[in-house]
Amino acid sequence: MTLQRVAITILILAVVLGHIAMWTSDMPRELALKLTLINALGWAVVILPAYGVAKWAALKRRD
Image 1 (cartoon, rainbow, N blue to C red):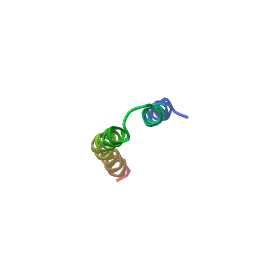
Image 2 (cartoon, rainbow, N blue to C red):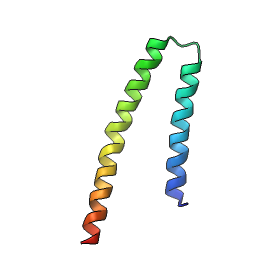
Image 3 (cartoon, rainbow, N blue to C red):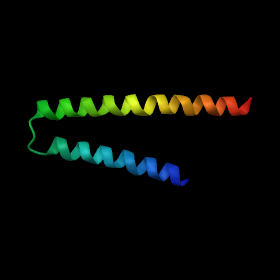
Image 4 (cartoon, rainbow, N blue to C red):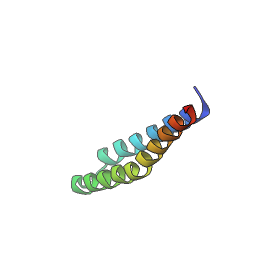
């Protein structure tokens, strides 16, 4: 496994564990849901375009 895959795996694991900790805490469920949705939207805005550009660049390199 490359260093990049290890780093991404650790990042995903940290985010998931953070959400698990938030949902099992005494935080109100409404607030936990709002924070989870904001976090998911934020990650989608950051990760999806980067993933798309990486795939596009890989296709361009093949040509």
